[in-house]
Length: 202
Image 1 (cartoon, one colour):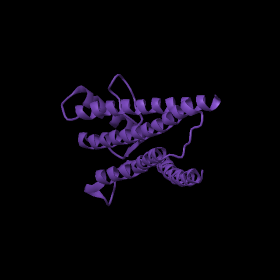
Image 2 (spheres, rainbow, N blue to C red):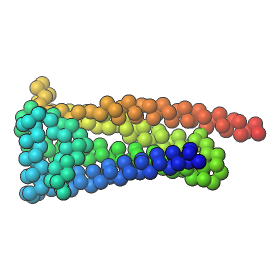
Image 3 (cartoon, helix red, strand yellow):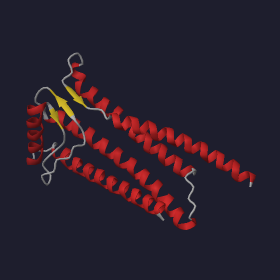
């Protein structure tokens, strides 16, 4: 019973985190779209970013929709940014948020499927091809985030690579967790082969 409750709680937690990141993605889409027009939202977002950078050289999020500040990325700059630079940073944040949401979606499906099997048979086996694939996909998504952030940093500094002025902080946590999930999926795959061999002997 405790095992079922724990898996159910963890699956709903993953779903809640997934929905938070999808909401963040929707907000970023709205803000990014506003920057292509002469809108108050775009002006407020740019003003907030430059005020943040003037205080600490770090821009930790966005502001302007329902007065929300969403820290999806950390952007460093030594001087004031333009609207085109802001668009690039927001696009990076949007893609990062989307990849993270998809990662938690795969983890939620994995835990939800395990919970369903426990309810049906009371003997859920984690060693299934579908479960291993979901873990691997979640790991690949997390692993791609720091490379995405590095690519956008390179793109921002492309006009002047000798003296870079911008930096999107890459996510070390995503790199480590992504590698761990991919390694875990490999162990799951080995467990699947072992279980198939055992089933063949019965």
